[in-house]
Image (cartoon, rainbow, N blue to C red):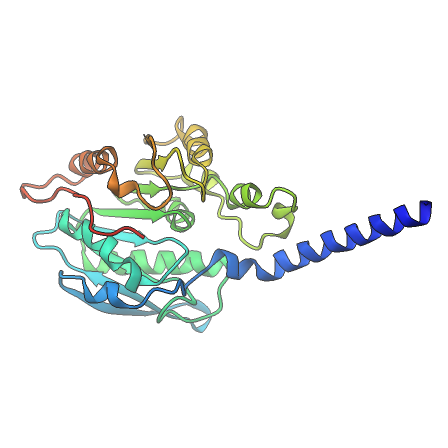
Length: 287
């Protein structure tokens, strides 16, 4: 009886260790998903003027972004997209901001699309700063906005702890990546196994710009409570406001008038424009 119990416990322990090992080895594939099965038809549907931009990154990387142009732009935006799909997929989302009056620089992360090179957290941060400097050169003297969506919030908050744009928007962000991982894998010691921290709380606390955090309360990918916790932890130190979207999920905030109205008001305050058609309207497709 004792032998059987020990054997069962040993097998369970071995199985648990193997799960942890697989989690550690496969986390890159879980976190970064450049090929989501979509074709490149998204980019073909973009109607605004756009072009490719390439940069040389650290450690021999070749970085790629799309540059989308607005007419009579009221500002320029650096948009860090989510973890799935390349800029060809995200181009239509970025074009919504072009229609609301922003030139948009939309970069791909290392390993996504035409961006190639070894990837780790520090290198991704260095790429974020390089793209920001590129945007400054392209639109010298223009007010800049940084936008981080989901995973992209990890780069956006770090960047805004080191530079000073006019404003920062975080859509469906988290307080720290470990808490997202813990939500999906509660029985695994994720904090000890994760190669990436993306500690949004500590980075956002150092931001020197106005911040809007938007999150849906039905989000099953990045729970609403993590976005709310991020806001609560920094609101005393940062000019920050929180938009809670009842019924909003991870991929559909643009369908809610409350979200679009809040973005329009935020942009109007920080990027005033005399143009009449610079309002964010419901997009034809979200991703």
